[in-house]
Image 1 (tube, rainbow, N blue to C red):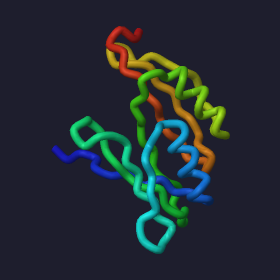
Image 2 (cartoon, one colour):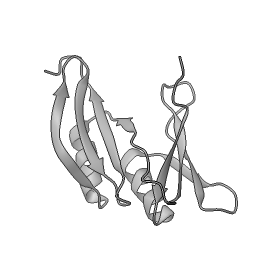
Image 3 (tube, rainbow, N blue to C red):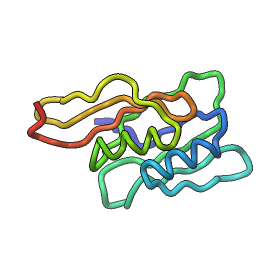
Image 4 (cartoon, one colour):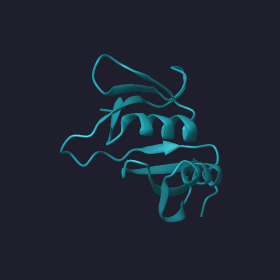
Length: 120
C-alpha cells in the first residue's frame, strides 16, 4: 500500500511559516539550498510520521495534512497564540480521537488530531 512520505506547505512568507510550525509543534526546520525551501523534521526516525517542507507559494492552493498532537486543547491555544485560527469545532471521531481544522499564518488549512480510543 502506498503511504504519504513527504508533505509541502506553501507559504507567502516562508520564514513566518517556519516560526509558526516550529513554535506550535516543536518541529526542527532548516533552509535547504539557495531557494525558499525549508526542510521540516517532525520527530525521531523511529517514531511513526513523515517529514516534509515549507516552500514559497506558487499558483497551487496547497495540501491539507493532519498532524497528531498530544493535547488538542494545548495545540489549539498555540495555534491562536502564533497568529493562526481555528476553523470549525472540535469533534470526536468515535474510537479514534479528537479532531479540529486550523488555519495557519499562511492561510493553509491543517487538521489536528489527538488520539483517544474512548472519543465518542
